[in-house]
Image: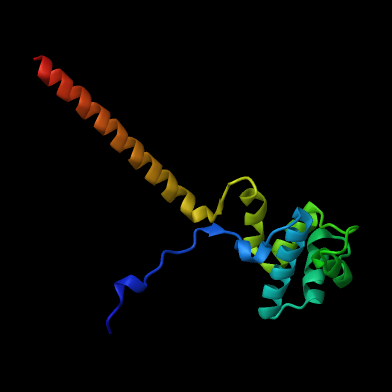
Length: 147
């Protein structure tokens, strides 16, 4: 069995939906589309909106109805925006961690899985070490010329 070395793709280290999901337009519309996508993905995994609402209710210790989920996904529903605690409950209920990448992405930031944080830190340490080594070599070269 031959493995194609060029077929390998690195693991996705950041979480978030693509711009194709959120689209353009007002912030509230993009959030509604994100919630709708998370609920469609959950449905594909066998979770109905009723089940998601029940899980959210349990998490929040207050009722969340299927109809409120529908309103949160409706771009035309101006009176119903998802509160932050319900947003967190939605992530918990659906497992849609990709939702977490949206708000930081609005500010040019990226959410990564915790397991990759140490690898990034290690990479930055190695880069700094290379920079310091280059500075040391430059100083040593100047010092040798003077001798």
